Amino acid sequence: MAEPLFQRLVIIGIGHIGSSIARALAAHPGLVGRLVIADTTPAHLKRAEELGLGAEYFADPSEAVKGADGVILCTPVGSFAAIAEAIAPHLQPGCILSDVGSTKQSVIRDVSPFVPEGVHFIPAHPLAGTEFSGPDAGLADLFQGRWCLIVPPEGADAAAVEKIEAFWAGLGARTAKMTAAHHDRVIAIVSHLPHLIAFTICGTADDLADETRDEVLQFAASGFRDFTRIAASDPIMWRDIFINNKDALLEMFARFSEDAQSMARAVRWGDTAYIEDKINRSRKIRKSLIDIKQA
Amino acid sequence: MAEPLFQRLVIIGIGHIGSSIARALAAHPGLVGRLVIADTTPAHLKRAEELGLGAEYFADPSEAVKGADGVILCTPVGSFAAIAEAIAPHLQPGCILSDVGSTKQSVIRDVSPFVPEGVHFIPAHPLAGTEFSGPDAGLADLFQGRWCLIVPPEGADAAAVEKIEAFWAGLGARTAKMTAAHHDRVIAIVSHLPHLIAFTICGTADDLADETRDEVLQFAASGFRDFTRIAASDPIMWRDIFINNKDALLEMFARFSEDAQSMARAVRWGDTAYIEDKINRSRKIRKSLIDIKQA
Image 1 (cartoon, one colour):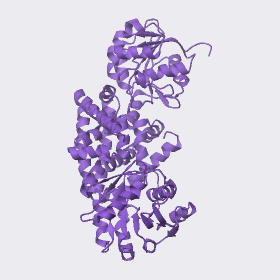
Image 2: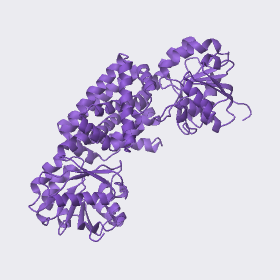
Image 3: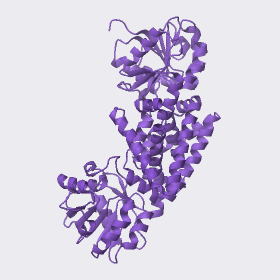
Image 4: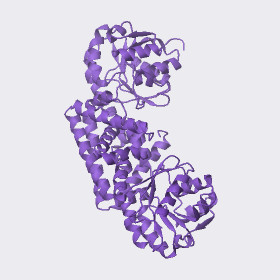
């Protein structure tokens, strides 16, 4: 590669995703000239430095972004407005500001008002991540073969959009563009609602009488175990996602709720045809996922 | 081992679990003298024979059980009453009749009335299984390190209980005894409810408008993908489980439903403390599972 995509790229928030980007960049040299890391949590910043994830380290994001031609917000989405307000006066013209947040309408709502003239705001969302958190949890191949959704606001600079696509493609991801509203609905059903359900059923189990609860833990069969894996995710990150994709999440939850009540009713009244039909449809969806290599 | 536990053991139903037992027995020689396989589905029986899973093959379970000292029902629990009625006259005194069904009160209700004097009925439930079905899906190490719950009816013969425990321990499983009612509640929350939820959310996704549905499949992130895995399970088996553990399943569903509605309400009204608290509790459960090596 003759010229790096970004001469000076700043990652704000060196958690699971931020540190995965840093590690993926180390594995794909040439994409970025100088990687700068900012984190307001001293322990995370110190750990990132120990791990040698970047070339420079800043506790203050607004110091870090000076002279940068790329900035990626990798903190929980609830923190974006404050960070955008703090860094905005220090962003240089031509800089591309992006993010990795799991909600997109809220991110555009919170960040756009602060974006200075001449700075390009191009939101993105890599569909990748494990249930682990923090700078130690990053994985160099986390984005390999996974989708990264690019959500350009209206009138976004085409060259800037292309650069963000090239960046994620450079880290091994497949990219697709969609509107923020559409993104938020799709992600509500594939990710946000499953997490809400997983968090809930763990709590339901925890509320059972002591004797039963101990045995729930002891005998956790595969169903429950799968649910607890995704339920182990970061509380602040998910609190922010739920609150910031409220409308789409509540719509999907209402649909799911109606369907679950209908299934429960079929169980109560022994409607075997209904139950079989629903299970057969589930299997078809699973098969579709396998066919398109998402499972 | 000087003497096999069973001289002539019959597996009725050579699907995922039945064929896993057959394979596990081949990997642990000496537990059983002669393994007999019965299946009323001609294709399954033929396939079992091609795979060489047993020593004898019968399309008629009541023929297969003649002279057996051990019989294990490995068909969907909804078929148990009819099978028990058919084989009962052919069971010899001293024979141990067991099963691998995921519901236990219904199994005792359906099978006990047919069990002849002198035959010992000792229900069991190995907490193991994948989402795959049929004789090809069996795994020799499926039970290794997993729990098998033994549910002896009142007044069960102690020696027969011990033999079933020894059998499962011989296949690598850990065993525990509990009452049928307690079993059904514990398994309702750790396995049956997660499956009901997984089947439901796949249907909810499938009902979305065409454009969104295609993208749901395309962009299935980790949350949804985990749900579809367990949703790929066998429709008849799960239909039977739901119907036959109706009371415990509906109770656990009602508890879950209340909790999910409360979570949705917290999302709607921005009750961040409630959401964080629930997610933190989920993480604790996950941590407990890891601590006791169930995850």
